[in-house]
Length: 100
Image 1 (tube, rainbow, N blue to C red):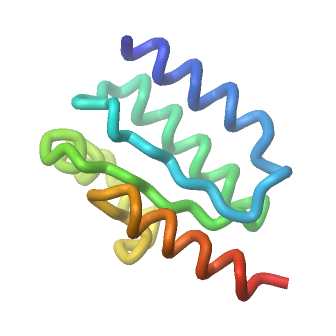
Image 2 (image 1 turned 120 degrees about the vertical axis):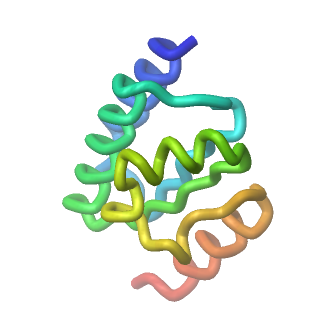
Image 3 (image 1 turned 90 degrees about the horizontal axis):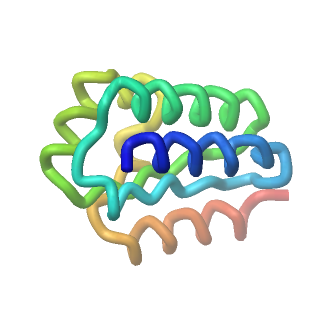
């Protein structure tokens, strides 16, 4: 499962230049390892370099704790980290509406 998550992140990561906002939905990821953490880090860094704002959906406490240990907060603003999908979608939509 871990490698599937990493593969999916890498697959979407290849198209980051096509987007202005990205929501990384970790709803189906109950735990992370270093492979997934590195894939997330690379995707987030590349998104930021492409001027794509990153939102993170992370409903699982254990996954959030693992993300904190990986210092994801260094790459994603606290205001862009959500525990439920609807607020993440609404925040991303609000941002897209004001973007040129």
